[in-house]
Image 1 (cartoon, rainbow, N blue to C red):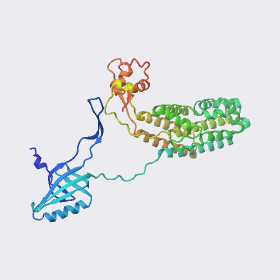
Image 2 (image 1 turned 45 degrees about the horizontal axis):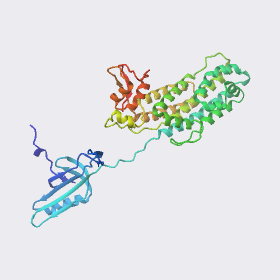
Image 3 (image 1 turned 45 degrees about the vertical axis):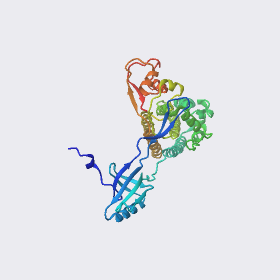
Image 4 (image 1 turned 30 degrees about the vertical axis):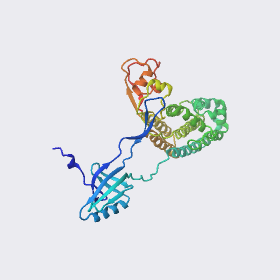
Length: 428
């Protein structure tokens, strides 16, 4: 049997001191600013969020011991904060605001109070937040140092007289192609593969010094632009491409790193050893550069979903401004691909270098997990008929500016024609 509203009322009290309540007022709804314009009949209300839950109570104490009850309530109010039992709203933690007390000879044993209580949200305790970007930069620096030591140690065991220039060229051809594509600052020193081959044979320590010179100066903090090869490129890439473009570029670099493995050519023992040492150095250098660029990817603020959908005409005049946030699926795909590439490289490493690779792998996973934590997931959309990408973006997503995302992610050959197939798009 349903209880009546009277049976559901709670006995009012503050910090355990009871009192009676005649009237209770609490603001509800939204606060905001009303804008009125000349020559227009329609006003515009700008919402500024919810009203603060301020509780105004008209309370009283009555009885032969009203003075003792009054003193107890006054003492409780002077404490400043505590638990309020609201007759209609239940228990809550509040802070005491400006109150007043009324006593008259006519009312005899009655004391009236106008009480005001404000919400008392507990202050959060400070907590440590791991700087995954800095940890990744430190781990990549250690990997670079370990790579140089490994290369110099391997080349010290090679008999330079038995290294054939042509055999060495064959052994590092793929590695030089990776240098041309992904480690372009080295091309300023080694304009062609033969310049690199001769240096490896005659002055191998100059090669490791050149690699360290290109990547070893990456010490800037995120957000600072310095004249350092690689760092400027990474910051500019992220500023222009955003999360999607940066993740796509890094995925290409990871695939190039995976392609660098043991040479299968029969080119002689010393030529093969020199080739393998060089390939390992280039692979490590590329992994260091990837780690440096990943450390530049910031952790985004959580995405905010639009509460209203502007009309297409409004969006044509003023495009929707959307915060750049990563797609969780893209970030996790890069994380898993990097994990695989580093494990592959670790199979060729000694104990010391294996530890350096493992540290970078763990730091990469930790930072990419942090980046993905505030990302958005992919969802499936299925148009019911052949439609232009613009129509799909506006009808399904409420944002005509996302037409490029629809076309690129789903590899649509022509934006004016999307067949009724399943599409993937980020949820925002």
